[in-house]
Length: 337
Image (cartoon, one colour):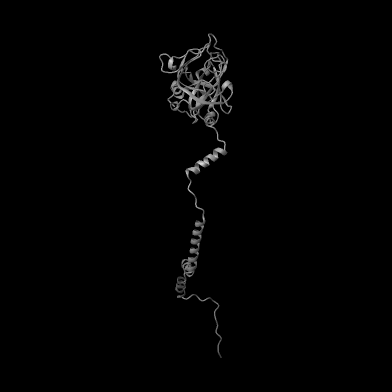
């Protein structure tokens, strides 16, 4: 009788030769880089066709683009002319005034009575017309034009307060102005462009040059200092603007031209002779004193100092004088700007 084979339920341990065989099989199976290369090789022709198609499409796109024409000078001139005709541009005086506007301050003086008028501006109010210069428009013994004006005897008005102008030259609150604006005042108050007010102290004075430097005790945020230029580049006919507080109104702007250079002016009371002045015809009235005279680059080239009027009106008739910024710097003990 044939016996039925019996099988054990216990798992048979792997053969000793099974592990090397499995490693060999794994080594024979290709990795993913090889599989990718094989797949690419099988579809090489398709890839090549797609690449050619992409290059051809790019060339067609470039060829279909419109050619850009090179700009000529006529094109540029035409564009500029179109802009000027269709867009209102600010004038040169307006841009110059805006460059310095936030640096111009109003100065009020309070205290002792003095010889300045009630708005603190130097005015020439002669009893008679100025003496005529000798032939050639030159004064005796001088190679410079001289303008002379004197008050009537005992006609110097008295005041309890004065109003003038000034310009910030250092953003910490250092202000350049005229001596006659602050003369005789025990207390000075400065009003800045944004309405901020502060008391000020006198730092330096030069009465014979009618110049003074004051410093505000406090200043508004982001106070800009004016850009100081040079009067050496000025010529008669150059445009200038005067910025200040005529009659306490302002800041007010007036524009004109340089009428002459190297002028002289005798103060109304006859005490001082101011020299090396800029003569200009931009309107200036009492209260403009100490304000800046500005060129078309927005640079301060002078400090408005005096006006000449052959009548007793004391208002502007077309002749104003400004101290050069170079004279102002040296007169108050500061290095040239």
